Image (cartoon, rainbow, N blue to C red; front, side):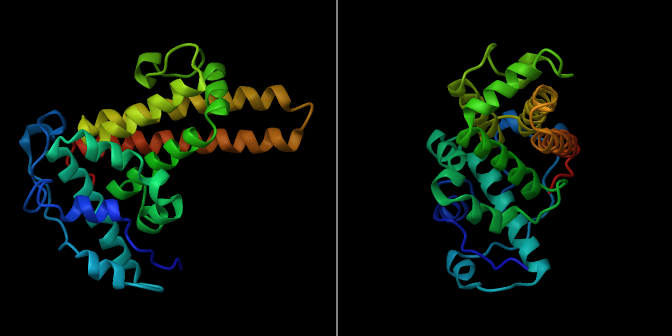
Length: 244
């Protein structure tokens, strides 16, 4: 069982700041409101920064799940209600500033059909792009013409360079906090589908030279397709007011 890690300071700031929304997090930016003006389900009680920091060692899976849902709902609801570009930028850079293991401690165990699970997948995708933009750009170029998504949905210029894919990854994640969250999830899913197609083509190209590496890339492509499906499903749940 993973040991609990302290919530990063930026989450404490967003969750607890009086300047970013108020109350139970039912306020939303109008561009991302759920269909029909439906109100959000009631959220679990909020932990204070001190209470979160004092949790150490192995914790009950139910409590970990409650913390995951609470933090995910808080940062999404309140960041969107604040409409503050600086808050959005800080949240986009969360993994970069705090470390992937810190965010993993919050959300990595969450199912794909939950808000924290969807956020985790979005952050992992963005971190991959940030760390290896050249490979991502190459895979995108290989996959865009054959992937079953419109280029405009994935949102990358053609042909893309490393800076282009980084910019799109940031823009897609920004949409979680300052746009239509369902569209952001769908764009991330489309991006994954293009990369999966490119990885499959790349695997075919290197199979005669390195069969083991080709097999690993093929498995990676399958994983990207699965992630795309999960993100697209999460988008549908958000529109149905069922992504919690």
